[in-house]
Image (cartoon, rainbow, N blue to C red; front, side, top):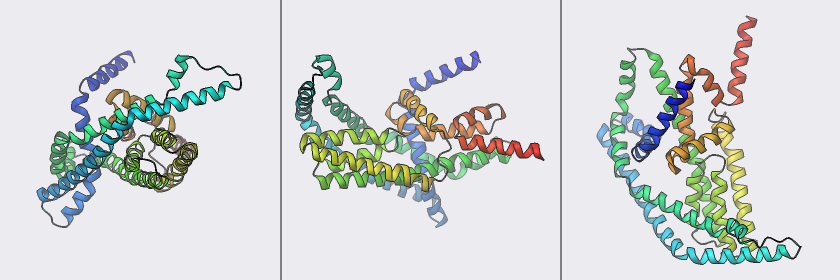
Length: 345
């Protein structure tokens, strides 16, 4: 056990050291998984492989340029206005503290005010958006890797089967991993897109500045499980408070809550069926772990990475127990039910 733990520490340290190389590579892999179905559709239409990949890459580049242009201009305006927003938020906080002190509660300590200052959160949001914009701009390596993966996609199953000596088991595991991750990413993209559109349209109707940018933030952060949607709502609510007042801020918070309940708790479980096959605790812990190892991109890819790890563990008798620990309660119930049937027989 100690040797395995030591090996795990060494592997994690290696991943963190090679983060600058691994992050673009992982993004390219998952981008390729998302666009594999359109690629096979073009191939079924007798479109040559190179032309099929070229069409997909051109579409991705157009989308990336559009997002960079749209978000870049909004982010520049937001960055210029950020000091004013922070100052206004600080004044609102001071007014709130003075109002609370009327009830005999003394919280005028500068340390407490510094910890509760929401202006810092606006600065964190601006930094996060700048990092995201940098990833969108620095896409040459990602697109190049993505292009070569797509060109090799058709031959990967044959290579995996050949590596396994012609056995079908390895190919089945590969297909299971790609189909599971592809299904999750595709459905999550649709629900995140719906979340971003609804949030952006609602903020535009209320009159909150940079509504399109906040819609994009809601789209991206919806990929982060459990807390992503909550984080996306906070800066929009604070901006509504600064810009429009308490009433519109409460309306903004209510709209985000309704969107998250409708999509996260009703729509996603219906279209994803049994879900991603991971327990809620594992999803949260995987987000924290991959975020620590790979940064913000690790948080976005935490569920696909953990799904891949779980499916890979299921194929090995020695690690099936760990796969069950990562899985949901339904997985354990199914195993117990099958064992019960075997005993009765």
